[in-house]
Image (cartoon, rainbow, N blue to C red; front, top):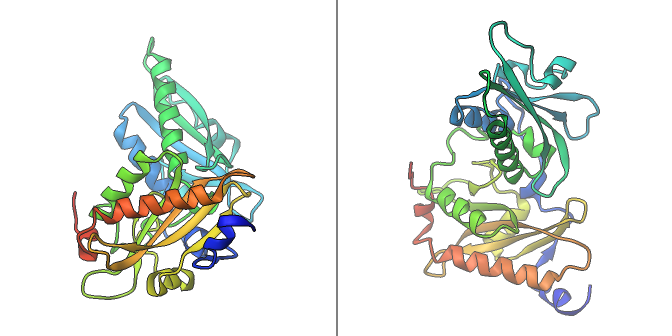
Length: 291
């Protein structure tokens, strides 16, 4: 490494892999995966959807399995059949319109297939169904880091979830910065306890800070990494409140390509961190329930 990026490493640690992004995840209980959560929400938002099934290959595996099914969470991780891949059988007396969408990560890596089956009356507008399915696929891609992330448990920790001020900040920030693939806010709950993820656009609410996170939280270090298939720039920065007090860590992941200006990306990350800090009166505010 040369130039400014080498210089900034004096105050940062280039890790072998930022652990908050893709490390050990607890087992799934009762088929309640992150994908299962996302498709359950999608179906509830669109009454015309009869079912959604997501199939794919789990990290480190070879066989295609069900990642989520609105028919039953009990189907999750069962080997996918030909019928699963078709989105289910036809029901007598009804017409179905089936849309198959590629399920990709936020950086464009193939994860599997999303099969959306609509209750389609005669003469229904299929263009409208196509648009709904496209939107679901886009939302799921925006909210998925990897196949491992897709198979995360939901909830990760039932004591924490997305109904917080930290999550409002996260959603606003990700919407404002399209190049930002992942954002995670780490903070310590009011009254003490372990530092956890309290704001995130890829789930994992309540994930406890690990050693790499602790270096940022406690020592004010910065973790940097070129991740994925060298198509992600990952940085974890100390997070301050509006008064300049360090209250946790901020994990950010940006799109990256060979030859991209790492200094500029890192500077952009610091600017986002400062933008977020101005919205935080104190650490406790991040945990305030908002909806």
